[in-house]
Image (cartoon, rainbow, N blue to C red; front, side):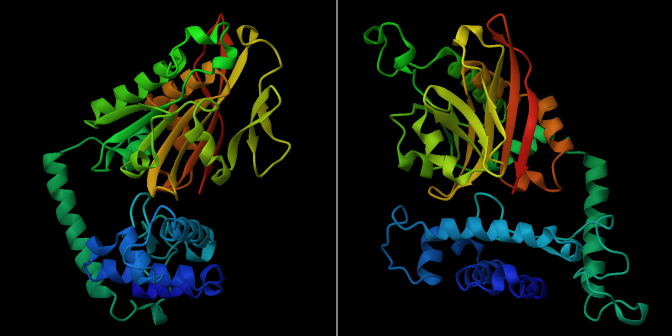
Amino acid sequence: MRDELGRILSHPLFRSSKRYPNLLRHIVERTLEGRASELKERTLGIEVFGRGANYDTNLDPIVRISVCEIRKRIGQYYQEAGHRGELHIELPLGSYVAEFHAVTPADAPAHTDVGGREPRNGTTAPGRLPWQIAIAAICLMLATVLAWQKPWAPPTSLDRFWSPVISSPNPVTLCVGHTDLSSVANPSSVPRLSVALPDVTALSSVVGLLSVKGKRCIIKGGSSTTLADLRNGPAVLIGAYNNDWTMRLKGQMRFTFESSGADRYIRDGQNASRTWSDPAVPVRELTQDYALISRVEDPTTGQVVVIAGGIHNYGTIAAGEFLSDSKYMDAVAARAPAGWWRKNVQLVIGTRVINGSSAPPSLLAAHFW
């Protein structure tokens, strides 16, 4: 594992930096030493970046930002063909503890040891054989026990998408956008904290799924949701243009909600000519709507955030349906890279509008990093 760490840190992705190698080395060493409980944001800020004992992690999110960048660079490192067969070091979303994954035989290059290096003269590399035998014996024992007991069904694609949220020990904050009063004929007749019915529909889809998984939910309106709420655990943001927390995160994404005058659209930050937008017609005449689903780690809060919002109401309803039905997430998994559920995810979906109702959603674009 330390050999693999050395290979990563000697790569140009890390070699030209001082901050990221120091933090990654510290995290890996503490994990290997059995001191994972010490890998907290404040502790890392003090021990790695020399911050004072009482520094404000909200005002100085250097640890969260650095870990996000490390995840991105590690992903780029293992995308290179020469490194795919190596033991993988990963920093899962929502955690500062390193994980180590041996590649499967199908993925590993032929005739290499677990470090991805060619053995000499056809022999196993020195010091590797006992480790491999021990791992093989443990795997065989576990396989025998599990084949007999069968304690669970394999996780579905939907389970994997939601796994960073479900696995958190803290409750989920569901932040719902408020009604856009500019579109209401008599704004004074609408309560200040009104929530649109389509947002409630999407919310109910998500709450239903999380409840089945035994996850406790705290539901709040956008204006009553604080940064402290979002730092307390994973969050789900419902709505786009009517939810300030959704719009705050757009600068970190490839796909973002944008507006120009009265026009609203979803933009691809890597292809300026690629957008998804509705024609400039009244909402009641729409025949197509689009939505954006994101599951990312917010560097400001250090927590996993799921976003589900449409350009209009139909898209938001479709996003809620997409996030609660396995068949849609199976379509995502079919075009996703290996280990996609441990990455940040963005999905652009579309839905036809028929007689004022949204049709089943379809996946239009996906991005993983």
